[in-house]
Length: 466
Image: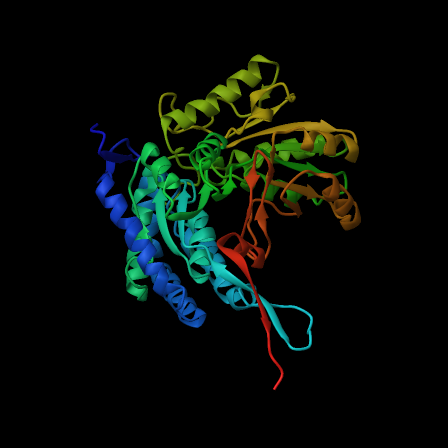
């Protein structure tokens, strides 16, 4: 494939679904120049007008959620019965919340009165924001940065993962229809080397990246020559703890979904489950029974509930983690022939439940990013907390119990950005989305999510009497 072309190979059937030319150096330079010029005007646009454009953009996307969903299924393999929901639910909810929260979050900060002085802190936009978004939830990840960045008065350049390159073009059409001035939002199809060059360009004021730990390191390396702030959301190895008093049926139902939805290709997917010994056996039995009810197959079939992974390479990593765990003594509870569509050498891989696992195994230590859950028995809360924290990641953790006080005590000890009680795998836009350790740094969503896209500017005015 020529260097100046990128392809989207569909995991559905291996066909080339889209092909786009990479931007030239001249086109990149022109886009940056337009972004700088457009932002000078956009920052003076009243916030109410910015918010109206974001509302119109959101409505445009919702109206086209079915066609966007089918396009997304072809690009990354999620079953078509779920794909439109990325727009109609999560995307719409986050865009709406951030739009309505903007006035309070971006208002001037008043300080205590002082005679003959007027003092306040204003939140000013940074300039041009570069948003680097992944393929697994292209709209959900990008909306976290694009909408608040624009509301704050910045211009945005989006670089979408090649696997879902068409999502960037959808964003552009939606904003054009909403009446956003030219140059305020743009996208670029560029490769890794070009991304590094753009990050190093002094016209970029902030980088919002969602992706792998390796990708995060690459962003940091590219930014190292500048005093450039970066927001890094780098995934997780998210644990769940099922206490003896958990509502078992509900816990099983939610945790199976948390492990298998989107074929486990979620930064906050449940990958490790620790179960109190008193309920371990019925939990595992129910978990396996429900996992067996998934239907693996062509994601364009509306009966399919588990589609292919994004690529054969991704599926092979899952198979490697499973095989390595079994070689070390783990037991796989889903038989090799229970899912007929599971085919080695293809992106179609069956879900799996592993027991007799421990933290020496890849499947309990590294991000698997597939429909696999390792389940361990624990004797008490202390052991559960120790194991939950025994990870390089810290994005989310869930606790399943009817004792809220116990959950709070456990949650205070767990090293994570979000602690759930009796739910998992969900981003509430009113709450800060953040991580610790190798899950990254920075914050999106909630009122705090605007802070990354502004800088404080103090106004200290003495007013002469008379």
